[in-house]
Length: 223
Image (cartoon, rainbow, N blue to C red; front, top):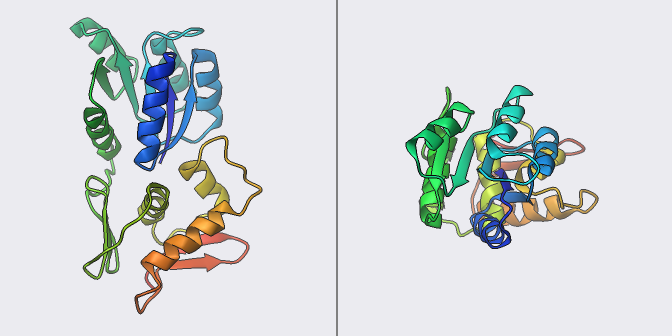
């Protein structure tokens, strides 16, 4: 999943970026509201994590502006303001949750899981395709009852493919959701990661689940 983090405190921003990447998220980090609006309107994000107090554009105005142009990704405010009125103001601006600093990273991850499950068509707690299962909360992947150990990037890639099982996923779509803006789309890194993932998910089993459509992309499905 791809996350836009907007945080002007260098230490906080670095910790958020590192922690989220360690858990398999693709992260773009920006430090002011102006750049955040550019990223938010030009990128495809699954989640926005926004500081309230930002140079160039206050967090509330930023979120209102993004919502006004059709950006619907869930948003979590991070702020030192703890008053009830501030929380209500943030939620009214279009935020899905409001986390007061200081906070534990474990709590942020829990809040992220909650907001990503919300909506008219919330994702099931455990994804299943044939005998393959993936639990986003515990990060446990199993096939035919056998545990499969994945790197954070492999987990993020498999999670994306399973969320869109039976759909053809292009390399560009994978790049947009599993990597950040710094990704070099001219390299074959997507193919390399797909091959490594296939070795873990398919190699020791009778039926392949990850299929290549030459010139198009990939699809995860049971044949």
